[in-house]
Image (tube, rainbow, N blue to C red):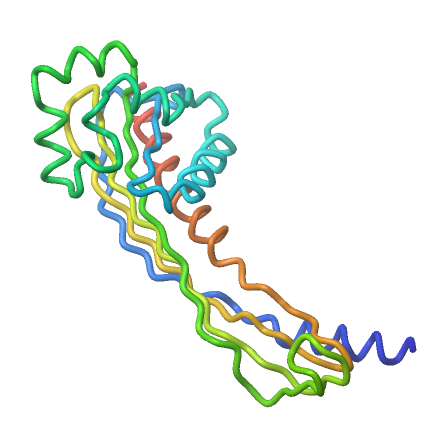
Length: 217
């Protein structure tokens, strides 16, 4: 039994592959921003809420003094302009909306300095490879391995509401493989593409805010 466990562990370690990242970052430096800035992270669609929540948590780790205004509070204060059905769909439309005189007073009442628009998605191919189980992948008597390609894409648009300018965009693609070595039973090894893409996105935004803070001193 000990030898079997060592063999299984060896297979798991050998099958762990590195994830690949494709990064596009057009963020610019903007004055008057500090690590204690006030921020709201908006999900572009209802399906993007998990990505927005992840990004919020990661940014708070990097910038503990960051003040986060909840998404629902921002949407309620600016109702109906930022409801999912009526919210701006691209940077040009967002700029036009934020620059409306009727919206400026609402923005001041909420006190948000940075607005981050988030869209994310994850796709995964079917499991395939030289592996089989007597009763399917979930059954017993398995041998070999199968794998699937997994990719997460997170895109953000960042606005400095204090100055009324765009800080640019981030566009992160992370690819990895879900691997399932099988020796009697399947042993799934997940690919944490969502967490990796979220962390990379947060790092780039927090790095920009940190640089702003240092440059303004």
